[in-house]
Image (tube, rainbow, N blue to C red; front, side, top):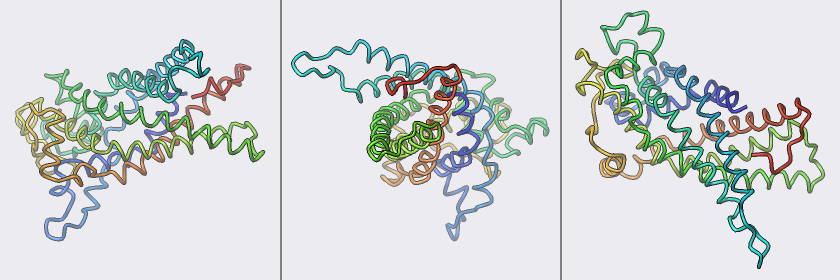
Length: 331
């Protein structure tokens, strides 16, 4: 169910993610805005919106499975061993704390699998087919992901450059999203039951889950946008760290999606915290929230679809086995 959900989201909302990456890139103004009028160069900005999607699809299938498997197991374990306070007859750990803990641990596991694909994806989103003249033309025109991967041949461990930045973004995001999602889902389902409109159908499960997930995800996305901007800058820098800083291993210049030379903005040794401080100093708070509106819309659609498909898939598969999931068994 998690794999199907991840695959659906990747294909449908991936172009929005590409636009977000380009807007958050340090070279956005010089690459995608007209120097005189500051108008958006739509051809450059909207070109190759699915670049890098292949690697993400391959990685998100196991990473999503690992996330939900870990999340469900830890949530069930913490719920089972959670003691009850005798004086008040209430659980020692509040339910939102259990959900936040389970989702955070699951995210650490998922990020370890997802980081290499995320690095390849974001660098591929910024490349054009003319980035490396020494590469066979058939490869250049067919797969920006493979073109990007070639730059990590001598330093494969650089594919995990940005794990801490990815985890720093995803941990607060999931820790905020999942408790809010759980409460919104209970609220929406409760309203249906109180109004006598609850049917327990598969369509109702999809609608309730998607609505709650979309609202929770969009709020969490907006709050964590500054960390997402830092993560984007760090991962775009990862490919530069594999060569001489100005191009590929053979010295050829690395170009972005418009065919311009990709310029380094941050030093290789800078930490995520240092990158964030530099963005704040040079671009102000607005720079840290660059792409926030697009990320809000993207997550509203993506989270609703992702968790809606996942939970619907769980219910469907359970019913095919002749099982009935109780509320406590659900997300």
